[in-house]
Image (cartoon, rainbow, N blue to C red; front, side, top):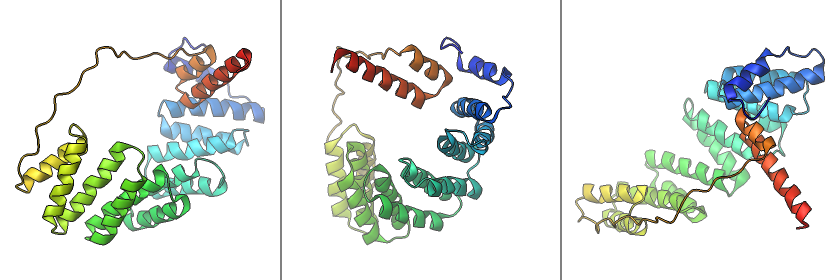
Length: 275
């Protein structure tokens, strides 16, 4: 297949090939076809094909099992697919994607069993302790505590997520919801002070706008006027030149493989330059 082909044509070319009878060749074929279907978000089909690759004991079985479970959950959010994700995580405890997998399974579980999802989020926090997934788990537990009117628990969780945030948007989100806790528990002056601080720190941000709305809803004076947006006419987007191998994978929609090909090309270029 050429990187010139659109993704749909590449899919058609792959599907036109007869599935090999020899197990190793068939496993490789199923891996490639399953990943193309996965990238195209033909999720039920991708799940079936990738599970076939796992059954053939492909060299890529760990990845195929992961993507089969992800595709299944995208196709249908239900208990069976959540358990499939968790089964993959249990079978591959040292894989770097385990925490992400447990996080995704807990989010999906929220749609049909909020109590079980809360237990899963708490287990995730105990396992990961810090980082993006632990922080998001604490945030969701904070929202649950707020809904349950457990003010102290909610305030503590939002305070911890704000302290752990390494991105301003995450920090503002946690500060905003902590202010919502103050407002809900009847501490209006404390909430108003927090809302004003959020509006001042990032006046054009989403949570600043929400904070302004809460202030107005509380009957507080209008915060300072929004600043005029700055413009930078010197900026222009840059374009990444893809190697032929990276372009091939990009054309199939296999972005992780394309990124890996780019990294290999960069490493080779550094070696050639003696860097």
